[in-house]
Amino acid sequence: MFVKTVIPEDATGETAALYAEDIAAMGRVMAATECWSARPDIIVPVESLLHQIRDGFSLGLLNFRLITFVAARLVPSSYCAHVYFRALSSMLGRAQALAVHRDYHNAGLSDQQVAMLDYAAQISRNASEITAGHIARLRDLGLSDLNIADIALAASFRHFMSRYFDAVGAMVEVEFLDDDPEIRATLAVGRK
Image (cartoon, rainbow, N blue to C red; front, side, top):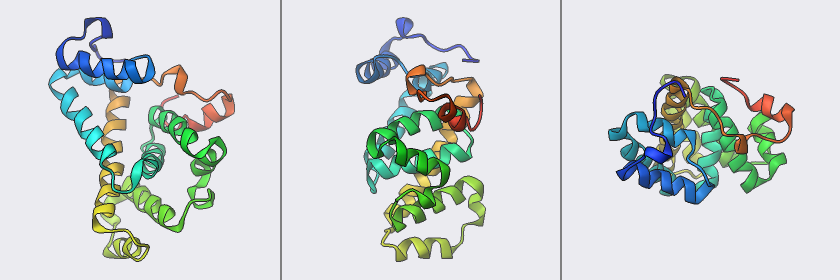
C-alpha cells in the first residue's frame, strides 16, 4: 500500500466492524477494504454503497460480477480482474470464466448477457458515445430501465473503485491469484 492505512490490530469503531466482516468471510482483511481506512470518514459510506449496489442488483449477483469483471479488465485493474475472476470461477466454473476474460461474445452467455456486457464495455471505453440506439437494443432484449441503470451503475462504480485501489497501491492477495502462472499473467491487465 502506498498510503498509510489502519491495520486490523489498530482498527476501532466502524472500521473495526468492517474489518471483522472481512475476517469472518475470508479469514483476513482485504486490501480493497483496508485501503479505504486512509479516509475513515469515507470507508463506511463506500462499503455501504458497494453492498447496496451489489445486494440490490436487479439482474442478480452473477451478472453484477460479469459486469465488474469486464469493467475491471478495461480500467485496467489487475487487482479487480484477479478478485472477480476467482468469484466468477466459483459461479461459472474456471473454463467459462476464462472464456469470458478472453472474449465474452464466445463464452456461452445469453444474448442478453452479451448485450449487457457490450453496454458495460462501452461505458468503460467512452460513455459519451452511448446513444439511444444502445439503450433500445437493451430494451429489445428484455432489459428494463432499472436493469439498464444498474448495469451503468455497476460498470461506473467499478471504475471508481478500481482506480482508487491502484492509486493508493492496493495489491491483490495471494489467495485470489490463480494457481496457473499463465492465467495469472493474463489477468494482470494493469499493474503487474
